[in-house]
Length: 133
Image (cartoon, rainbow, N blue to C red; front, side, top):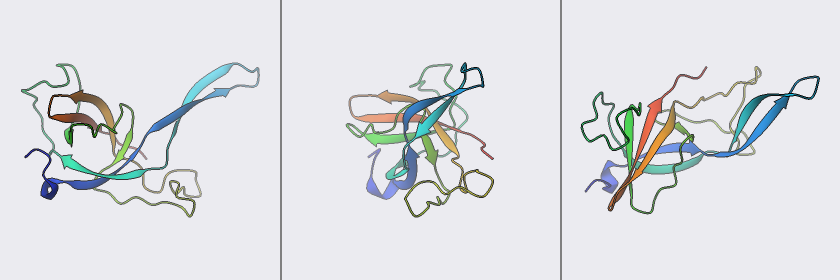
């Protein structure tokens, strides 16, 4: 019942595929930049925004806005993945995220995965809304 087809909605997800270290002029490492995969389209049940967590499936200190419910074995979402929910996504001709002339994403992501919790029958994924400009 939790993962009925009629309750599912589509969204896009990009996984962390690696980390690139930046260097200054002296060759010292300065910052870490995550590298993400090309976004994939998925369908899942996404809860409406909520402010309380009586079940505490992700612990008492985890901050999240919505929960994605997946069927057991469908745990393709990972902590740190970027999500585009309820917003269109624009890809370039290579299938990568489209970037404008200023080097920014034309359609920035709006959620990030913060926790994944598996039970006997389903997988719950906590997601947090983020503001990216």
